[in-house]
Amino acid sequence: MSIAMTAPVEPSAAHDGRAAPHDPYGVTLADGHRYHASGPDDGVARAGQDLTLWCDARAVAVFQVSEADDGITLRSSTPHDAHLPVQALLPVLAAVFCRHKACKRASVIWPGTDADPELAAWLVAAVRDGVGEQFSQVDGASALQVSRQTFWQHPAQWLQGPSSAGMAQQYRVSDGKRHPLRAPKPVGEVYRRHIARLGTSFSLRAIDQPGDVERFHEWMNLDSVAHFWEQTGTLAEHAEYLAKMQADPHTVTLFACFDDEPFAYFEVYWAKEDRIAPFCEAADYDRGFHLLVGSTRFRSPGRTEAWLRSIVHYIFLDDPRTQRIVGEPRIDHDRWIAYMQGQGAARLREFDFPHKRAVLIAFERQTVFEQYAPW
Image 1 (spheres, rainbow, N blue to C red):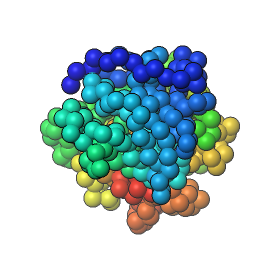
Image 2 (image 1 turned 30 degrees about the vertical axis):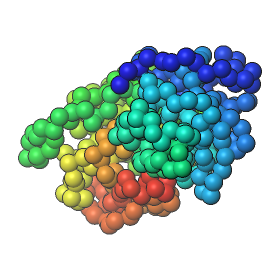
Image 3 (image 1 turned 180 degrees about the vertical axis):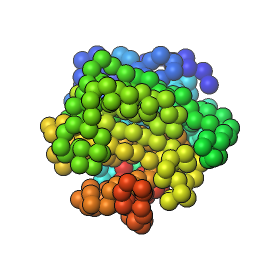
């Protein structure tokens, strides 16, 4: 599809994109342009107001916002531009789903376009790309339907690099376990999400910066961490541990950050090659994670919910073939187990590792996106 832009829309003075603040839900696409959405005074879709889609500093579409049942309708008041990338619509949808927790569905409508073959082709592309889930032509208008779970499963706004999904499926045998060949370890930042209700950004990045080993060493020796991890040690021992994790193709090590300040450590692993596999009947793309929170500054209930939902979101986005995320917390970590159940995890059963008695928990993709969107 062509990425050439048509003539920009003439917005009102209230929609001056050059004067608008940076939209944290904007997205830079493969065409090199950054797209964002704004209303008269912010990036929220407000009933009775207009929402403008910008390409860099040019307004390219305007939508009239109205409420309908449990959803929001966005009715275009400008001609549809068939050259607009379908993913350019994501910031408009973010103004709905990232700002309105109760909104379950959005309808984007272009009046008087039911016989427009270019728009029809664009809508097909939008559904095939995962921007929307279905489209229709009714009463002379074309409409794209987008549910909350469809929106949150699109990776373009959240993943900061290539996902694991691009790997061709090939099989290997490691330690007697047959499993798909895994993607190389990611580098740098892998995920970022602005959390409007907290006024902060959550991100995940690889452990590859000066001071990371020292930070990990400090956290591992905290009493609150050592009780569950049992990994106290010297700086050299912890450097060796991280090097071992980096060399292990089934595990990715990450720091979690709020506003770029690290506060937690995650080990995200492929369950098929992990010690948990015999206890959970691991499928090829099941994953799991281990974690520790090292900074007490980020232990509020609101932030805990934000980072837990975000790490689950990241794992499911990284490979759409992942249908389940498993975990094996120690059985006496009862408060954490109960908390994960409250966030959508199912408690399946108890079992014994050589070093601990554990509880098998699992997040299912369908349950997470239907009932526990990141928010």
